[in-house]
Structures are given as C-alpha cells and as structure tokens.
Length: 154
Image 1 (tube, rainbow, N blue to C red):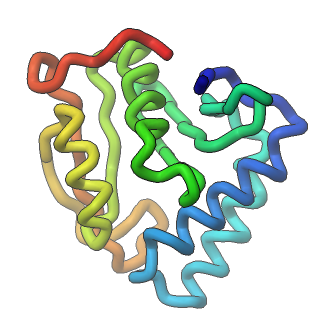
Image 2: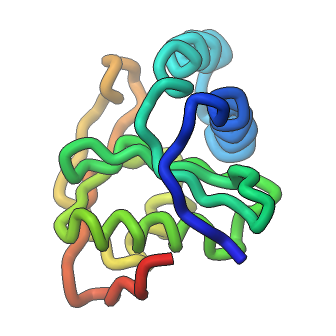
C-alpha cells in the first residue's frame, strides 16, 4: 500500500538518494560537470523543501514531488519502483490540489514526456535552455482537464 504525505526534516537524506538514483537512471544526457553542479545545488535545497512523498507501508520514501504555485518543479521516483504507478499516483494527488498544474521536462527525456502526455498533459511550448541557462531544452506542459481523468487521491 502506497501512502502520500508531506516531507519531514528526517527525510532529507533519502530524498537526495532518490534524486541521485533517478537522475542517474534517466538523465544520461547530462554532461558530468553539469551533473555535479546540479547535484551541489539540489543538495543545498532539496532536504529542506516542502515535498510530497510517496511512501511504502513502513513509511519509507519511494518517490517525491515538489509543487510551487501549481507548477510541478520536480517528480522523481526511485528507479527500483519505476513502472509501478507511484509517479502517476503522486501526479494525480498533485492534480487534486492544483487542477491546472504545469511542469517542464527535459526534451532529451522522451520517457518522461510520454509519461506526462499519457496522464493528460499537453505541450504548450519549448525553451532552448534549462532554468539555470544550460543547453538542455525544456518542453513546457500543462494539464488539460478531461484528457485523462485523475483518479481519487492516494
């Protein structure tokens, strides 16, 4: 049984571990120096961020999502749990809180783009650089109500 809860200070180390493992599994397009710089930035803010966590029956975090003013800044799932519906459950929970949620996805991450489009997100634009000005294009997505009805909150 998967639960969804807000993060607590003691989750910080596990959240960083999920992020690192997920990025290593899905972001092979990052240059190693960019990966290290991003890691340093993430370690500086992620442990203190207000996150939604997907946890197992023992309250062990398996995935997390960061939403800021209806914009999903991050969704990362432990690679051991990919394909189990945990990411979709977090997104549906987020849509219950923010029905017109938006997000940005690296253009090189075709699996993630397909994941969001399957959930009812539509492309609304493209930027040639990521939020830090690095040459990793972003696809802008917005949830389109009615294309894929969100399930009940987990």
